Image 1 (tube, rainbow, N blue to C red):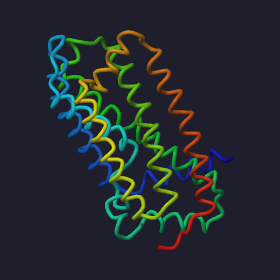
Image 2 (cartoon, rainbow, N blue to C red; image 1 turned 180 degrees about the vertical axis):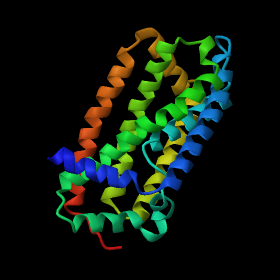
Image 3 (cartoon, helix red, strand yellow; image 1 turned 60 degrees about the vertical axis):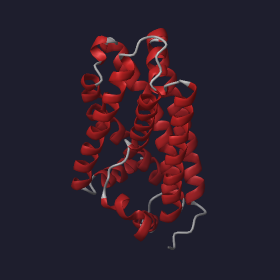
Image 4 (cartoon, one colour; image 1 turned 90 degrees about the horizontal axis):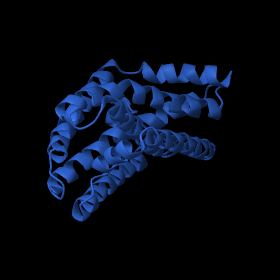
Length: 241
């Protein structure tokens, strides 16, 4: 019953904005192209070469894209920082005979549906733009994509906790802080000559299915943690703007 009622909430969330889906598709295609262009140059480098600009660009874009892949760019996300539409929606949902567990599960179901729906839009064009066919087998590429899908689910869960647990202004500043964190991670990797994207490719080549399996297991464990934190926060947060 809990899963059934949560799925009703997920469907309600998914049916909110047709325009949002169009923007999300364009958003993922944009990232697919520019990640692919930077990654192509990295994949074609000779051993010992280090193009820090390409490392920086591909890592920042990849981390950003997978972090928000589970979200539809609907109107509530375009205006949340000003009108706090997410808090208004939560206040309405809390006034209905819906358990907090169902509300949270429904939101995370929405996250995972969007992740799996938008993943092909990012990864299929990326395969061709980056020229993966000359460097990686199809099996390894699928394993690599699943690895990053798990990373995206792990990071996306943090956004859900903040989205549901705090006001729109708090969520806005969390998003700004997370972007700064991603940029700093990218800069750090570029400075020391490490590409997170390239490193995951090498790990998949060396260890195969073990890497995506570990990524998905970590995502499931972290999702459970994020859900518990969200439930706890919803029981105590202020729904007034």
